[in-house]
Amino acid sequence: MQTVLITGAASGIGRDTTRLFAGAGWQCVLVDHNEQALHTLGQSLPAPASAAHVLRTIDLTDPQQIASLGDGTPALDAILNNAGMSDASNTPLAEQSPAQMGRLLALNLAAPAAVVDACTHLLKPGARVVNVASGAGLHAIPWRGAYSPSKAGLIAQTLALAQARPDWCVTVLAPGFVRTELVDGLIQAGRLKPERALAKIPLGRMAAPEEMAQALYFLASPGAQPLSGQMLPVDGGSSIYGGSQALAPATWAAQPLDMPMQLEVCGGDAAPWQDVAQPAIGRPHYAACLDLSPLSCESAGLLQAVHAATARFAARCAQQASLTVLLPSRKVDRWQHAGDGAAARMLVSTLACEWGPRALRVNALEVPGDADPQSLHPLLRFVCGPAAQYLTGQTLVGRSVAPRESP
Image 1 (cartoon, helix red, strand yellow):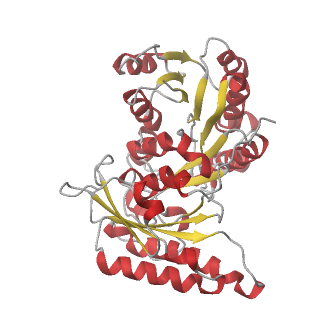
Image 2 (cartoon, rainbow, N blue to C red):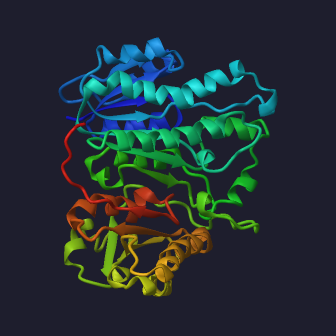
Image 3 (cartoon, rainbow, N blue to C red):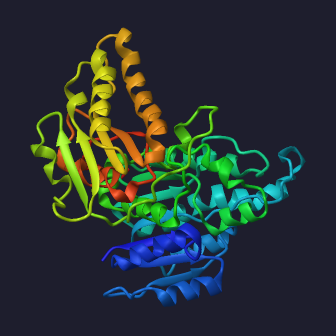
């Protein structure tokens, strides 16, 4: 049995994430400041096979209370730093005092590091640490106080932790617009206009909390190791959209997140990749394609190879499907060819913006020359499949997985 610590467990993304882990048989250490909501959640969860879930009512803005996590908490396979808050005061930043910003910065930026420090001795070898940031950490959002600065800081902090602890798998999730209680409150207060938000999301819809739970479940698994030290923006493509034209709303509802995937592997030797997904012949399924053709390209021909792969996919699939293209690692033989790879990656993002309203997704995965395909199967299973229906337009780096010793 595996054990996970989840902060902010009693509401929103944390609540759905907790239910997913508990349903999969994990022992959950649940941390929240809302004692009643935490107790209600704990009562609703299936009991683990050999140990009870642990409920910890803690104010994560208090360093002493965080330090208490080091006592009475079982050994951990994963930590999910999910707790966070926004600023609803609408007070201009220049008019805010350090005290006004203090609680938000304590929870969003200081607490994740403090939780890791308090639980370091509890983390098992190869443990996973996942911090939940936000798309607000990638683009400034005014009139929400220090929310964007705090999330930008958390992203940088996570990447620094990955460098400091290469024996762990450390990643950061950057959700986009998720229909949580917090977002509903912003909408009801008139501070967030849904139609304006959707106009900047290529997939044309907000995510359900369950979709972020699926991403967190994957990042807390051993299969996330190739992504260590990286950020995963599960945001419907909003982080890669830079146009001034309003995007169309979605015309297709999301498929069930646990739907079987039918994966087509094309453009090269399919044998090393066939086990990414089991066939779903004769059953309703999510259609996905893994195109290997760019892997064999010289650096000067990568853009054309990716374009050809996407054109073939578009000719076969009209809606609700995913394309994942495999790219060689970013090494070029001549400086004149350096632009081709960047152009290919931006092509993936641009196509994601054009295809989004039809729920067509496209992502790329860079594959090191020495990578074992088997080590990338769990990552590809997630990226290609229905659990990642809010992930599009991204180029991820599938780093080689090798045993590392603790520093």
